[in-house]
Image 1 (cartoon, rainbow, N blue to C red):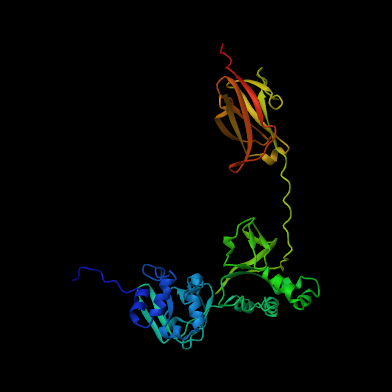
Image 2: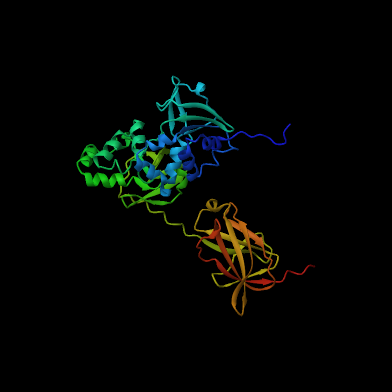
Length: 406
């Protein structure tokens, strides 16, 4: 009988205790991934490179990943070694496995092998999964390698090579976002354009850099109306509509393709650095004017006097607003704010306000509640939480006491 529950070591604790994964544990901590790989977590499979495997890497690569400025890339390298769920060596079949980084590992049952590497220690158990020890570090594909492997970006890759931009877009480099036109996109250009660009390297470089943004920017990070500066210097114009993302009016057909040094968004047209967004249409002129039920009790509204002239109405009667300059149906459901101002020694002071919705006929009304006296009534057509500029919306209203009951 014992008085405590024995809890097995989780993945991080097991790796810490092997004596041959100090570099891995140190990098996991530096990348802020220790909690994600520790209990409690869902089951995980970790392909764990040894200290000797990291020592075999190019020192420049190790230094780059160890730089705090490149922690996002370090996280991608480490997560490329992690698969969701517990996968024992005997369960590995020919095919691929999706990693938490987003790219896939190539698997073969014979061996088994992962990206051509046979584990030197398999099925090391942990509370939250299993560890397979490897003597190599798996490095995800960078932007150029990903584009090369898609099969639909051959023209783009050739143009990048011709412009001498291959190294700038390859690992190690800072994070980048590339809007990658397909071969079909280049095919939409006028005949002979691609050949002419390949013969004009400065212009080609200018166009290619217009498709690249500093930093890894996922589609969810882009907002409607946003302007994003490119490495070329000019901006890209973002539009979002119906759950889709458009760059300079060109739809992103495949978003968030992960790469070691950033992200790729696939587009169906080549972007023009001289692009300018179409001018926004002029806002319709909108006027709000007060209308009031006739004092005689008729079932119609009459227009109040012209701006800054007097309108007389009894307290308890109905005061309304009519919107002109736009079709009635176009403003149905929009809100109008009534504001009552009273003159004081300090000037006109807001005393009360109320918001009502417009009906299908473009009108709204409410019962007059301010005490008898002279008031300045201002009406504003609202849009969201802001007010639209509106003309003819200030009226002097004299409120009379209610008609005495007989």
